[in-house]
Image: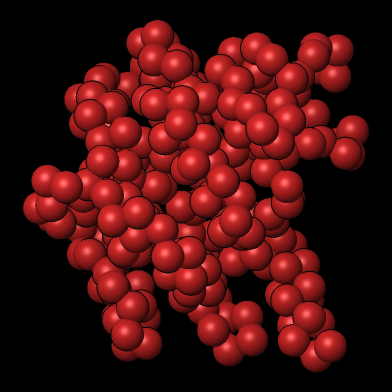
Length: 247
């Protein structure tokens, strides 16, 4: 799929867990774990996009590809758009935005989402998984998405809302996984739109799209990746991944 590129935005200045891309699991940094997963997909070329020289050096010292962007961007999408422009490749049709803090991501879920995105000719698509813990509904660190139709392995459904808190009384509520596939023309359109008040208040940039009546298709992931947002998350995922290595 040479018309697709994977871009992984990464920065050191995370508010809840500073320097998390450089934290080590099995002696490999989190950002290099994610890059390794992306590269294994064979979907297309993979790059980390960062404004931090420390991350650039961490990725490139192991032979990874990294694009040094401006340090300050309002959102991760703005960062990947700058990286996309730096590539200067007019053949790219789809840009995949992978999160740099999910070192246990199952790349097969991303590959399946890309196939469905191409088949449906989606403008923008993303992933979600089932919610199995009632505590997730009120956990503000876990973004929830509701869809117009129930998700199953063979369909995409348009998102009807994204929120940080929701009562478990609605239909089709899922745990949102922050991975996006953009048709390039809509990535360009996205970054030209002004940030909306809704986006700023909830700190969810996808709400900018919804506020401008741009549909986001949602696909169901088979796996439930663990994002590293806090020190507790890091210790949990470190324990899981290091245990797997010992087996």
